[in-house]
Figure 1 (spheres, rainbow, N blue to C red):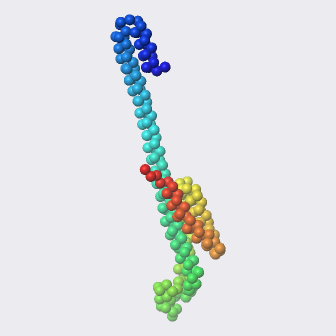
Figure 2 (figure 1 turned 135 degrees about the vertical axis):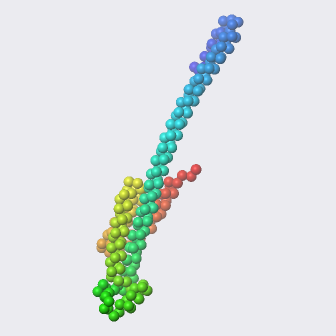
Figure 3 (figure 1 turned 120 degrees about the vertical axis):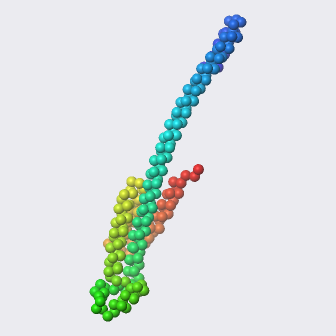
Length: 211
């Protein structure tokens, strides 16, 4: 039973009581309006409090979500940069190796070698490389991929699980190839390397919110 029903019953009772009914009816209506107004304000206050609480929690959640995304995106950029540097060295080393470019042994590079000037000219022209250059490049590959692996380990708790797994698998493949030089692994390395940017891009597009 609501306030209107109560008012109607009270009105009918008062009318049946006699002439003073009109005055009493006015008083009852006035009192009912005051009560209704107070009830309305009470619930409006509660509703506003609930909305403010929800907004506060939502803002807090958005802040946390944005901070987490920023950190995740930062790791994708760092991983991409570290990996690109290492893989460029990897490509250069094995590109030179499989091109059959002549490698000058360390013992030939000395001031008493009559062909030293000719060797220097070939090196500058990109026709030949030295054993020292190849050893340095291979050492750089190991250090650069270790730097990449360090960042990958740090990122595990922040980046998408599928992306982490693909990066980890790629690292393991390259490391195994570096140690064993099994040419059968090159196709798998190349395939996975091409998949990764697409996987990351599709994942990030999936997180995009369009207002």
